[in-house]
Image (spheres, helix red, strand yellow):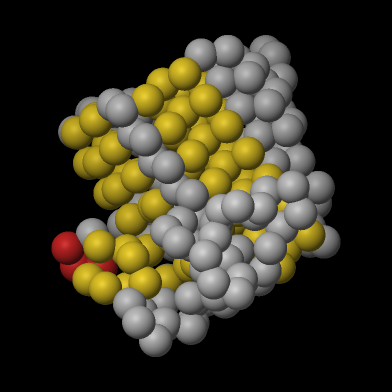
Length: 193
């Protein structure tokens, strides 16, 4: 696998910001905006990618899905922020999708296309489509916050939670994931603690 980190992609015409086609790769701390395509896609036309990690990224203003966490298996997509995409996040394969923030998609916030996916503790602020479209009837879909998030200033891309937000301590600890990752009585919903 490889590591792709600390990249900034602005205005990529006709392509995705990131395309993960292999195994055991990590894509983290990247900023992708104004792309005519997907922010990030995990996919290979003739192989099955496994065990990739996508975390701490921002995917903003893409004409397609901000983050496609899927195809293959064992992927972990967490603590990412998707802003003003057609769909915030799409899930395929038995991916683990935890603590992401999706703001203002023009369509659905999260679309789940595999019954074995685990989708928890995400924060979705969507006025268009469905906040969580569980098209595959996945059974491990829980504690995704869809109320008024109470961001400090979403208009200036500040997605930290303001005092009094119902998303503060509003989600639940996930065994094997949440330990040591939150302050307070429970994890905050979304990407930022």
